Image 1 (cartoon, rainbow, N blue to C red):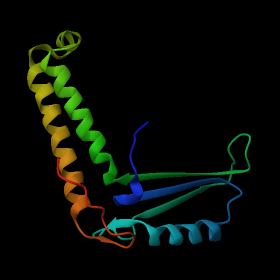
Image 2 (tube, rainbow, N blue to C red; image 1 turned 120 degrees about the vertical axis):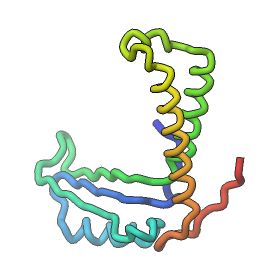
Image 3 (tube, rainbow, N blue to C red; image 1 turned 90 degrees about the vertical axis):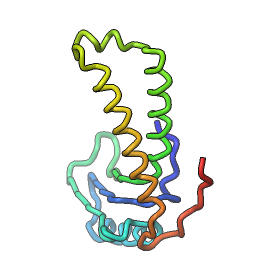
Image 4 (cartoon, helix red, strand yellow; image 1 turned 135 degrees about the horizontal axis):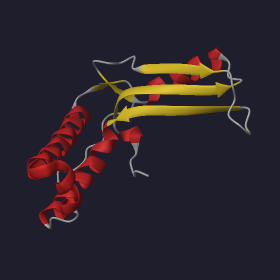
Length: 143
C-alpha cells in the first residue's frame, strides 16, 4: 500500500465504478459533492468518469470503486527512485537481469531511473499549479 493523502493534492482524473443496485441519481449526486471538495487540474475540470455494472459483488448488495490519478503519488515515486538508486549503486540483483537484457542493462537501468525522476518532477510541477475547485494547495517545504 502507498502512504499518500490525495485530499491535499491535485487530481488529474478520477473514475467511479459502481456495482449492484446503485441508482444513477445517487452516483451523480455524490460525484457533484466530491467534485466540490477536490482540486482538479485546470485543463481537466470535468475529469470524472462513472461506470455502473448491475451485477453486485459477491456477498454485498452494492460497492463503489474510485480510481484516480493524483499528484500525491509524487512522494512515493521519489522514494522508489531513491531506493532504486541505492540498490543500483551496489549493483544489487543486476546480475539476474544481465542474462535477459544482454549488454544493454546499464543503459536500460539508467533510463528507467531517469524516467522515474522525470515522472516525479511532472507530478510535483502539476501539484504546484493552480487547480479548479477544492481546497487550496498545501505548501510542502522543499527537500
